[in-house]
Structure formats: C-alpha cells, structure tokens
Length: 510
Image 1 (cartoon, one colour):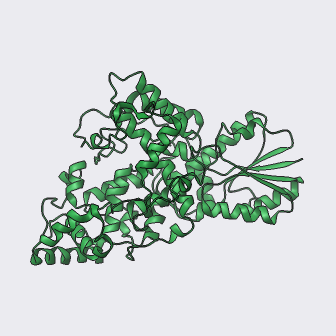
Image 2: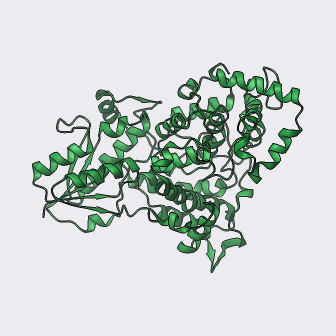
C-alpha cells in the first residue's frame, strides 16, 4: 500500500515510531505554506526558525533513506493550502492511504478531520508521541472538581512520572519552592552569554520576502542564533544545565533592561517544534542537579520542572478541554485597541519599551515580562483579548496557539473569568520595581501616584479595580486590595482615575 504521511512544521520529532515503521512505499510530505504564515502576522525570526527546522528535518529523513517530498514557498506545485496540496499528491502518486499526526491546534485538527472525510482513501491519525499527557487527561483529572487548580495537577504529574519524588513525598519535603524564586537581579551573579549560533539564513529569508509574506520584527540573517536542528537543541540543553541552571530558580522572575535571557534556557522553541521531548529535558536537568547537589539548590530545578511538567502540560490540557469556545472568551468585556507602541517599542515607559524592544529584536521575552509587563499593561487599559492574542501569537518564536492562547487569554488577560488564574495578574508599578531594574532609568517615577511624572501603572491599577470590581467582589484573593480601595479618599481616587482615563484614551502619548 502506497502511504502518504504528513509532517507539520511543529511535528519534528526524531524519535517518533513512524520512522521505525515504514517501507519503500511510504512518502513523507512537509511544506512551507502561506496558510501557516498568513493566519496571523508573525515575527520574521519565527517564520525563519520553523522553515529552517523543517528543511533540516527533511534532510535528516533523507539521510536515513526515507522518501521525502518537501515543498518550499516558491515551489510551483505548492497551492499554499494544506488540503489542496494533499489532494494533489494523492492523485499524482496514486496514494492508497493518508496518515497524519494529531495536530496541536484546533483549527488544524478540524481541517485535517475534514480532509480525511473528503479523501476517497483510507486515513488514519496517530499520536505525536511528544506530550506527557493525552489530550483529554486533564479534563478527566478535573472531572467533578470545582476548579482547575494547576498545583493539584502538577502534583499528580510528579507522582505519575515519579519525578523529584521520594516514594509518595516530594523531594526536599516541599512540592513548590516558588517563594524562593523571586529574587531581583542586581548585577551579580554574572550571567553567561547565551548559547547561540551564527547561522546564515539568507536563502530562507529571501524566499520568505520574495513570496511577499508580511512579517515584523528584526533579524540578522548571517548570525541567526536559534537552534534549528536536534543537535543544536541538545547543545543548548547541555549549556543550560552546565551554566545556567545553578541560578535559574532564584532569578526566573527577575527583569533587567540590559539582559535579554538572564538564566533562562531558551528551549521553548526546541520543545514546541518537537525537536526535543519534554521528558528528555526534564531528565537531563534532574540528572545534572543530582550530580551537583552541593552547588545547585533544589529550588532551581523544581522551578524549571514545574514550568514543563506542570504549566506546559496543564495549558495544553486546558486548551483541548475548552476549545473552540475559549478563543471567544472576554468575560471582563474589554474592548480597547492595542497601542501602536506594541509594534515599535516607542513609549517612554521604560519597562514596556525594553520588554517590547527585546521581543522585536529577539522574538523572545520570558514569562514575567509577558505576564507582568506587556500583559499587565494591556489588561489595565482593557484591550480586547482578540488583539492581545494576535500580538502574542505573532511575536514570540515559541508561540503556538495551544500554549499561547491559554497563557494569554487565561493567565494574562483573565478573559476566561478565572478558569486558569485564581485572580487577575495585575500590579501597580511597585511590583515592577521590586522584580526589575527598569524603574531606575524611567522617565516616570514609580513612587508617585499623582501628576504627570507618576508611573502610569499606579493610576491604571486602581482604576481597573474600580471599573471591574463586580467581577472580583467574591474573590478571596482580591479581598485585601478591594479593602484598600474602599479606604482610599474620594479625592485621591478621583485624581487617579482621571489620569488613568487619559492614559487609556491615548496610551501612545505616554
């Protein structure tokens, strides 16, 4: 039977059982398509990274004797549409069976199911063999429970996979060391240079530009620094273990205007494209810690494991439990436009300027920059979550909808009404000052609440609590802040709200 097997751009799993289970009549198909470059406007580094990784993966398959059809953007036969390309190949090669791996985006899942129904040949879907849970495992775990508390799911995952466990108890006696992972970085310890690369991607870039694909952001085409082969990814993983893990947990929430990566691993693209399996990353980190317990504290490794074993799997489970309705959530009724400076970094607010500038230059920002700087501001000025979604999905190299939308619409924007987050992740300037070095060089003064020199986050924060109070009246985690709001003098609150309204009306003026 002549079989056609589809590989999507985020299905570059070298360890998949497919490659031990095929024959000379199996064709593998991978394609660059406008369908994928155009459904949202992407950062140029993101498009280049996926195309480079796909090219390298196709070469890897060929080197192992596999028959590969790889259509680039400029291939005349490429219709730029997945279904039409598959139908064309089925007819041209006399394909008798079509096989695909379950995609991780709802829109592609729906498209492939429809394609399988339309084709007049046998079709079969396979697991991608990447995640540590099935699509519906989280839904089953929380069935009958009142809330989707990530911590309980994380503990279930620790026990299930026997990771950082002593029998049925957590290693070190605690499940979570988050309280120890909130240090502000003050210039020490020194941060090793990131383990980047100097790849020449001019051919790929020319192909993207020649096709007229609309992108944004910056790129150095002769010194592209992201890992796009499995060997690259393993090198970055080893570098993280040997040089960065020792301080990862301590400073995982820290922010600095001169430091793009701090002690973060830069492995999210490697995992989200499936070049690395999450379990091999976790195992490597734990093994390195076990051999270096004298110098690496448990909070460093637990903080990292929680992000992958906990949050990553949790967010995927929420995605498949809640889609497609999740993409329409706007429980707070926000409707404002995303400021223009999100595309240019042209703002006098130092924290936003640097977080966005880093994102435009590197297609990267770590989780606290996303949550408490760009996400915090967008929520406080009440931007419509559709616009926030599109920005986050486009700008970050690791952004694929299953992980982006749950973090953005749920964790960051509280658009799901508290399904993911137990409270909105908002703050005044005080939190930003506590966790970052942004405020020292800012045109605005974080200690001031009033006047034209006051940090905009201060007035926006209190205004948000007033305007959205009805949503939080019965939330115990918001009780203290609402109590402080009630104690505020009316004239003071009126002045804060007046300034907040000016910022919301014209955010690009600040």
